[in-house]
Length: 495
Figure 1 (cartoon, rainbow, N blue to C red):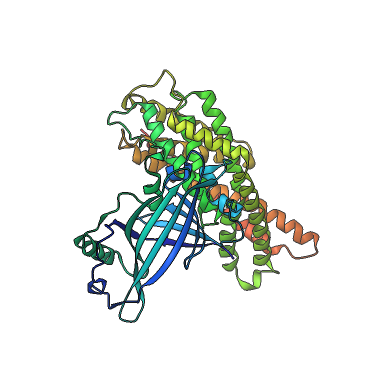
Figure 2 (cartoon, rainbow, N blue to C red):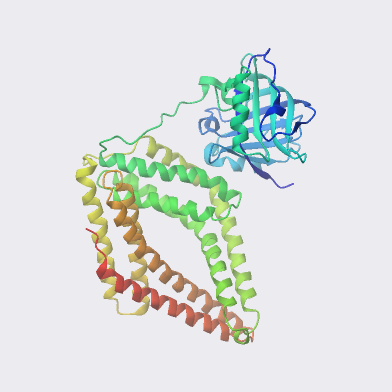
């Protein structure tokens, strides 16, 4: 069976053993409460010796005895919820199945997972129903006994209200009712957190100082990108739409920051990380590029007059790009399982925990303008080289370099906003260049693909006419984008 996912929205309450559950049917919108169901649950939680999962607010458990037996992984979600990914129970009892391990690789890497806590829970489930018998929410009355590996058992009681088809207003109303009955908000975010207590590593939350130095701006911006990598890694593995793109953007932003902030971040260490991030982005690139091209060509072929589509054009293009995507995704997943990737993650942790700052670190408000000016001048030189190119192919290459320079300027400006609010306008102008030249570069890549497929069709005795039409359309797209950029460039003010 394939894994399943659900967003878990719930609230938890500590409650004394003698407190009586209030009348739940009196809650607004609740028509009745189903007969309670009693369950005896066992959950074995796994983590590394350093409790890396717990430190990142991720849980991994093997649950038996209930209606949702299996391996459960929970990630922090948006809007206060938690994303739960469930894998079939399988035969493995003592070790975590590899498919489950991969979902938490970004945190555990190649470190072993072992049992850290066992929870025995006697649960009484009360389902809150609407007038049609639909389940709005479930209240679990849990009597818990937790045993940390090598420790003594600890017992407590808690109430847990989880939404099913109800809304958050029901959670608020239930909270008022339960606290009036004697409950209080839970002392921890989960049973596991309560059981582990102060054993979980306390990673201090670093915040940007009110008067930051330039290295502080780097740390804040780079830290956000490392966090994005941690969040996107599990999504790429689960094939969440657009996850590869977002993952690659985080790696590009981080590479760019390491380049922009060279005056304050050790160049040797930074360039080594940039090389590894470039490798990682390259491993992710084939699948992402194929994903974009599939969407583009599906629309392009559909717009062609029917009488001018010679042969199975859309299908052939899509078949090719599907194979490229499949192979590219396999390569990306292999990279995410490699020791090279794990060591890169280790290095990124170290980078954010203690950036390798050089001696030229000054007040950000005094220094960041110099860094932005350097990146702007770099982009301006790339524009001049494109204008001086002697061939179309050379100009295409130089315009791609302009685009890369505009990205770097954009990301640098974004990182500067905390001390230079006007840098947001600079970032927006650089993004405008990036988008226009992105169209140009996409047309260059698309033309290469169409030329390749046209030759294949011709060699097989087919009619490549439609591929020629599409190639001409892509050439026109590229020319339009190039002309738009050169028209826009003199009007852009970066100071």
